[in-house]
Image 1: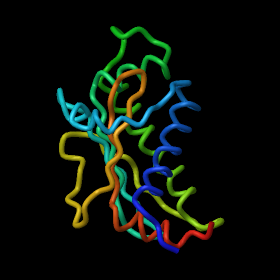
Image 2: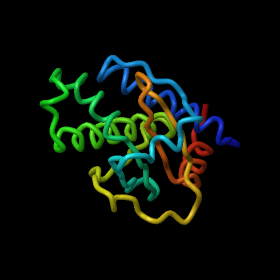
Image 3: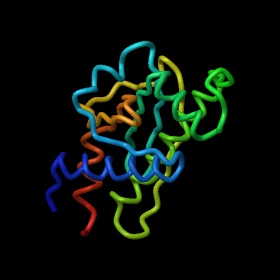
Length: 162
């Protein structure tokens, strides 16, 4: 089965939307025009290794303002009470949940998968041999970006039986 990057983008968009709607009761929109905005003002970088069935990596690039809006919704706290630890926790947990959802959508049936623990920080991103799949989103007007190893995603999607 052939799989296009458009199909992968739809899978990623569904996983991101479902995760944020279920966790934070927030609506996500695709926002390709805001891709550069996600890299502005020292974003929080989170990386998640895919250990099995094939190695790969997923990434989340989250501006601090976006992470703060999500932390307010998830922790029900005032903006002044939000700590760096909360911002990192929110970003890592979102990537972990989105990553698990994407893997379930990509893999056939009950195929097991294994994800590492999210790594947070300016050096969290590993070097990728293949160009990443990049999807830009906005939640309540705040941008963020999801990236993943494109070759891995295409192989997994091609193996899935619809």
